[in-house]
Amino acid sequence: MLAKFWIAACLFGLPLRAVTVDVAPHSSIDSLAAARDFLRAQRQKGVAPPYIVRVHAGTYWLTETLVLGPEDSGITIENAPGEHAVISGGRRIEGWRVTSGHLLTAPATGTFNQLFVAGRRAQRARSPNYGFYRAEGPSSQDHPFLLHFRDGEIKPDWAGSRAEVVALLAWAELRMPITSVDAAAHIARLAANPQRSNREVDARYWIENTRDALDEPGEWYLDTGAATLYYWPIPGDNLTRDEAIAPAIEELVRIENARDIVLRGLDFRHSEWTMPSTGYAGRQAAMEAPSAVEATGAENVTIDRCTFSQMGGYAVWFGRGSKHNRVTGNEIHDMGAGGIKIGETVQRPEPADQNFENTVTDNDIHDLGLVYPSAVGIWVGQSSRNTISHNHIHDLSYTAISVGWTWGYGPNLCNGNRIEFNHLHRIGKRILSDLGAIYTLGVQPGTVIRNNLIHDVASFTYGGWGIYLDEGSSNILVEDNIVYNTKSAGFHQHYGRDNIVRNNIFAFGREYQLMRTRAENHVSFTFEKNIVYFDSGRLLGSNWSGAGYRMDRNLYWDVRGEPVTFANRTFDAWRAEGQDPDSIIADPLFVNPDNYDFRLRSHSPAFRLGFRRIDMKDVGLRRPAKSK
Image (cartoon, rainbow, N blue to C red; front, top):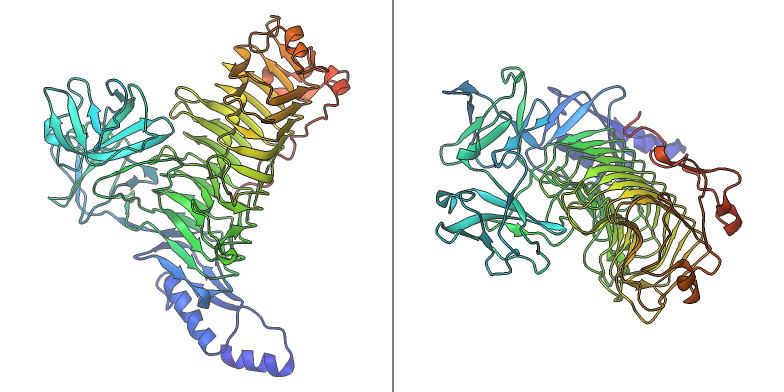
């Protein structure tokens, strides 16, 4: 019948309508794979796209990754109107029984690293239950890693077991099994080597996945030898009623060299994370983590109004050769790693393999880094002319938006990106260090960071910055942003050249307001027509030697009424060096800065400097994520 309609439409010039397939539990087409295969058969019969797969209410358990290739181009997979379809990479754990004490047990074959009970992420057995142990002294650069522990924190019988050390080292984490323990010397030998950048003094760490750490409600432990899962229920748990789900696959959907695919309104859950038997040492941004939806060679693919939750890695990754794709209106939360990755860590010489012109807008991305603390909300690497806008990113332990992946002044395919109208807050949460709400790397002509609202950024030790132009960041425009309540500074440039920072408000930095690290023999940045307002710390931090920056027509105000100094210089001495000749020290007359209302009163002296009002009414989500 479908083929007859297609032939008649061609003969009589009728408009082609979409071929629609319904997927429902207990029907002839009861899985996404069955719907895909049905439509592939229609294509072979000559029935052309567009194709629509309507997924009706229910949970669809994937036993393997759903792969969409070039022969699947033109497919839209969406939830049926008014219905709720869950696409799960997990499997139900059943057969629970009560053992002695507080524990429940269930048979469980294979291995898994996560458990979700009644929709809640359960804690894999952990010691200590709260907070951290502290290593002794500088972290190891030995091969393999040697952990110097304090008395009683590491047990010799954990060596050779499935116990894992999870350590926080500056801006990354390390997760490794223990191979041997010297109890007398208090040294645990781990299974692999650290990264050179994995450095921290008295580093925090904890132990996961030991039977003796199963000592509190909400924790679980899998005994793979006995094929038994142990769980200590919290009050209210009822596993004869509530589902317990263990993820079984890492990738739920893979898109390969396909175009014009739409995933809309679906609820993706339960992707797994795994690691090599020797563990791993993170470099940055948790690039080791998998993604639930991964795409290579994808073009004009849209992921719209979906939910991603209860996952081990990232939600979405558009990798090699992906262009003109859209990730819009999704909610991403309760993630082992981060939200969305665009691009790669490597540079592809052939244009067909390069990544560019993707759009990531109106996504609510929060509660990230629950397995990989160094994960990023939105990561863009070696990719150009993307739009990252109107996203709400909050509650994660590392950077919210990271763009770059070339350290220094070398070749960089990351340029012309627009990062604008995003609301970013509760970034870092004092867990990792050397981070920013917005973080850039490398030479990026045409990249613009504009009209973002950034607040509450806190690192563990150093480096809780609002806007952080790291190594080699160059040719970037930073304007019309409001940044407040940062630990280290609202703005920091490590080193770079020819950046423009103008018409921003930087307020309430705790330690400093502005920071600069490396002096070079060129202009690093021009800082003009900004308002800097603070009530603690100092105005300038780190290295302000040399003359490689230009500052003018700015307004500075210390609420405490103390004289504003510029890297241990008076204002007059600073101006005598050629900086800020037309800047002023004056109250900018915000409407209500104590409540973070940074609108300016009509007679603000900032207007005389050429400062323009910053309109924040369109910042963040323009519609609730996953709205219908």
